[in-house]
Length: 427
Image (cartoon, rainbow, N blue to C red; front, side):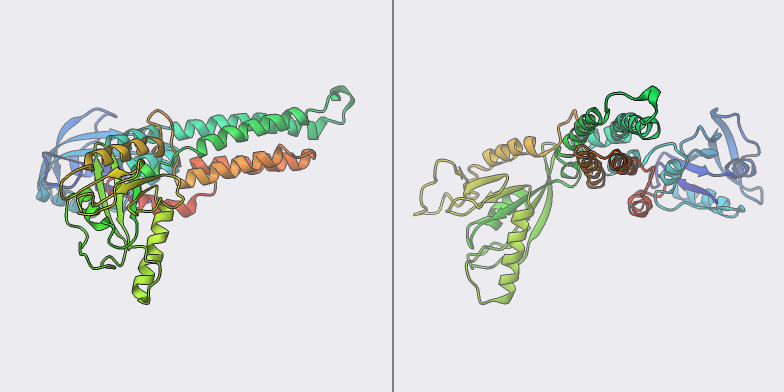
């Protein structure tokens, strides 16, 4: 495996650039540039030189022997002056050394995963932490990167292994006279059902994607209901064309917004015309219906009651229009022109968010983790209904495989490239 290098402290220019080297030839590279290898975990000041002996920079040099390093391999750090020319010169000197190459995106973290320094759930949390823009995103990512998901999975696995050991003992020795006794399967079925319920309860919590990607808020209603005007007001810019002509909005328009620590994804949609001869408008209406169905929160601007939706707010928009019918008791009165009702609408949206977002003190799972949790819970639910010990044991094995996939012990090669491709080069 090649030895890799990259700046891990962000793109220069900066006061300091931390350049990492990881792999079997990391310390040889340090010796080549710095003259000798310092004692482990002791920072020393060295003059770095290229192959011709020309000075490159004065840098702090640290060495971390594997496996007790961030990647599990021999790892060195060169704390350089952070100018672009300095960094380029040191990288060029490293690239000339045998078996050294520039790292790919996420390759340092991938090696840490392969060497057991962190598991897949922690790597996913680190990826979310690198992308965090709000305090809630940061807290959730820190919790996952710190091993909260792993600890849940390990607790479930330990309980599962206890059940598996008992059923395997029954299969191996249950017919022997000195161990014969009451049938243990009813108690094991009850325990399997309880474990499956615990796993399913965690999987049913609001997903972490709502924190990471933003709560999806779709504005829906008939043509000329004021959707685009309200959309622009919420986005605080003219993102959508506003016109009295029906059918102006033909396609969904998405704008990310962060307000008071909550990330939102606002979606303006085409008016829900009852009938249209325009094929383009018909496509827009179909996409609008899809957007309303997929939204976490629906802002309905129609005069009729909102369509059935898990979370909807009924907005009486254009309240300033002369002759407008009065609002009903459960409508939120809004006039963008007069600036009336927008703060109240944001407060009601924040109230809805408190129910839709993961609780700040609990672990939230991503889609991949939820899928494997549900697979484990389903296997345990099936096991709890079985009278055959052999089939019961097989369902426990299926649950174990699912739990192992959460932390990366099994069946995750297909997700690694997608995950680490989102990382920066130095991570």
